[in-house]
Length: 580
Ligand code: GLC
Image (cartoon, rainbow, N blue to C red):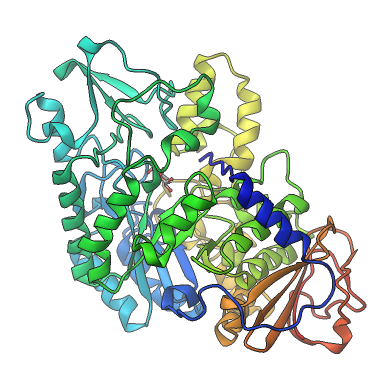
C-alpha cells in the first residue's frame, strides 16, 4: 500500500533540532525515555506475525490452517516472542485473503473451525503467548449478510450500513480505489440503481461508521472475541473509517497522496473514543492502529494515553522508503530518528521492516545475494530489536526468507498485484516494466509458504501450495538452521533474549550518532544508568563508524560476526551491540 506521511512544519523543525543535536560525542546516561513510568506488557513484548495461509497446512489442501499453527506453537514459543498477531481468520470468500470478511464471528473454512480456534488460544495461553487479532472494519466483504441486505433495497434496514450514492444524482465525484482494476472507488449496482463505495476491491465495500447501529454491531463483535480471551486488536485500515459523506470532489491527482484526503476525517477520533469506552477499556487488551494518520499530530492523537483511544501506532514511512530503485541509508536514518524523536516523551510506536503487505525485508533493506544474505538478515533483525517501540517481526524473517521474485503474472495471487496488472494492460502500460517492478515489490513476495525444511513444498504442505514455494527452501529453512548455533534463526532467539534481559532496549532514550555516515547506522540507548551502543554497517564494504566511542573498552553483547569490529571499522553488514 502506498502511504505517505506529511509532517507539519513545526514537527519537522522540532525533529530537525533533535537530530541536529545528536552528534558523535558520548551521551550521559539519563533516566528519560518515553512513557517509562507506565510500563506495559505490550510495550515490552516482541510480536511475531503469522500469515495463517502460509504458515503450516495440516490437511494437505495447500492452504495453511489453525491446526497447522497449533502444531507449530512450540516452535513459536522457542523463538522467545511474547505475542502473535494473526492476519484475519474470519469467514471470507478470500478476495483479499481474509481482509474481506463475510462472517465476523466464524472461522474461514480453509482455516478450520471455532473448536480449532479455541484450542489455538488455549495452546497459546498455556505457553504464555498472547494473541492479537486483526479487526477489519473499515469494510466488509460484499458477501457479508449486511451487504446482501443493503444492496437488496433502498429501504432495507441495512442500507445505511454502507455508503450508497443514488444514480439519479449523477455519477459521484471520482474517488480513488487502491485495488480496483479501474481505480474507481464507486461501483454501480443495478439492483437499486446506485453506486457503492469501496476504497479497496469491489468485493470490499466500505462500512458506514456514521451509523450508530453499525458501530454497535462492531463493538459487539469485538466483545465476542474479547470474551473469548484474546489479548489485542490490530485495527486494519481504520484511519479511513470516517468519511465526509457529502463526498466532495478532490483536486486532480489527489490519489498520489490519498492519505491526506482519506485518513483521519472528522469523526474518527469520536469513533475511537466510543470504541475505547464500549470495549477496549473493559478488557485487558492492547490495540494497535494500522497507519498513523496524515502527520505526527494525528499519530500522537491516536495513541496519547490521556485521550483514551488506542495504545500503539504503526507508521509506514519507514517501510515505504525501500523502492525497486533503492533507498539511501541517510534517508532511512532520518525517518526512523524523526519518528523516534516525536514519540520520545509520550505515546508508543511499533518498529518493523516487513509484514504481509511488503516484500521480504532482507531483499528490500538488506542484501539477498549468497555472500551477504546471512549477515544482512541478522543486521536488520538487530535494528528491529534494538529500537524503541514494540517490535513486530514477520514469520520467516527469523530464517532470512527472501523475495520469491516470480516472473509471470500467473504466479501471483494477490488482488492488488493482479488487478494492477489488468489496469496496466487496459491502459497501455509497459507490462514488462510492471513485472520487473513487482518482482521486487509485490506483496506476494512476502507471502510464500514458510520454509520448514528441505522436503516437498518446504514442509509447509503435502498438497500444492496456494502460492509457489520459494525454490531456495533447500538452503534456507528452519530444520537446517535449528542445527546451526550461528544461524539466522538462532541469532534471532539470542537477540530477543537480549531485549528481554535489558529493558533499556525497550524504554531507553535513543540518540543517533555519526548522523551523516552514509553506510553506518549508529545509536545509543540509555535508561536508568544503563547505556548501549548499536553499530550497524548497512553496506557490503567495510565501513568506519565515527562515534567517538572506543569499542575496545566496551563490553560486546552480541554480534553477527564471530569477531566484532576493532577500532570502529565494521565488516560488511556487521551488526554489533555493546554495553558502555
Ligand atoms: C490493510 C491490510 C491489507 C489489506 C487492506 C485492505 O492494509 O494490511 O493486507 O489488503 O488493509 O483490508
